[in-house]
View: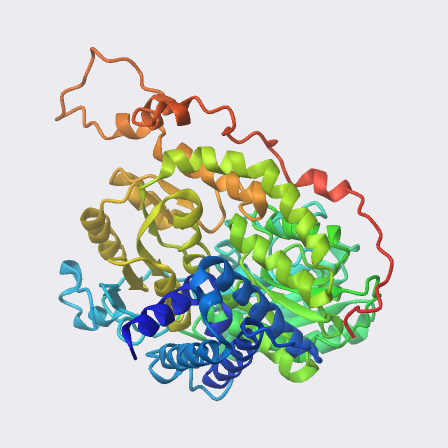
Length: 116
Length: 520
């Protein structure tokens, strides 16, 4: 990852880690679902694409995604200089890194429990 | 792994894996202590038991219930009154505690008859209370008393009563957290879905993992009511037994303390399709985001924004008065479970404090993930500490204040470190905008209390400065402040009332017309 992208991913992930709770659900499958849906919607919102949550569960993802996108726009003016493809690429790297920190590389031994 | 080994625990080598220091560049893939394991023999833990976690933390805040421990009387006494989970019905659950008073003869001959006699007697003594929770204890679990069968018998004989059985004896888990888990699952298995509620709003939530410590729940409920949201149940602070039987009818579970109550939220999602939204009720910005998210879920964001604007304008100048005087003060954030992550970042952002250590008595690795993620570099994170480790950390880190429970708090005071009660609070509530200022005020009062300067002097050893007068809080806190801050006319100290909760109980709320976009 080039230095600028790496720094930007670190900035974006730092915000999530310090201010959000949705990435820390209790099991691997929960975290995967949360990261995928919330970051997926955040990416669309940052790219100016419509997001129409249909189910109650979708609405939950959407409120977290909306607030995250707003926070990113407010704190990182450089986002406005990126094109849609660049945002998608950046968010894909962020997703990969968040999955690593909270799921695949996590040291939390309870994540793979079969029950809640 | 950046483990931290305490000098005092070198004789217990397994302890090394339970403390880490977050160094530069460390993240959760390289820096996480072990957690939620049995306490290592030789380490005198500060933990409670699984019975305590079920009864004292989660069961007893329910307000309209006879809480009966089936066991020796000490079990109920030692889980009584030490947490200030108040209620709006005269604090029935705090005033009274009940036990079957099991003795040696019952261990030999069985205690089921005794249990039945106690249940009936308790209902007779309190004829207005028709709900009961019975808590299993170690002794009665080991002799195999069938509490469920006795409860069924009583419910047949007294058809207007309802009884919940919590089978979480003290040994049923490494700490109180085992009891949190058991009572969550028992409640949804036994009681959720057995009452059909009256729905009064288009927007209906369960407020979960909130225990009304000094009125926290009532403060948050006020915000929800101002937005026209019906709080169908609160799990469990100031909560009503029958409201909690109707949890299945909410549109959204708003989860505060995930440590103690995520289990029931997860099960409500799986069994009833009710989604879970995790929130932070502490701190201006996290609370604002939380209210905003709940409102957005229902499409009523304008109502949240009005509250956020009003409350911020009213209380922010007071928070900032304290922030100016708390900047750079070092904190050991040593609560039980969830507050290590609720508070870790926001007290740095909004009060200027520096968190030098987090610990948890009964948290899981998931709590440490959240806490460590929210801490800055060099923070020392400790799982299930013992008293000697706590003292060694205080000596090493030299904090200005410690936020913890009353037992380790009293130890800290003996070595000259002021403490605030993170479990039951000093002068709460601490949730809400006003509550957050009350917390800042308590921190200020603790750090700058002149008693600490006086208490630090040992009259048998230290010279006593008889030529100096008494130093006030303001003399201490303002000594190095710039003039424009000291003389600011916009910043001000807390100006709220002594009791910020009772007036909420008589408040009237606006009514809102139904909106077509209301949740299904």
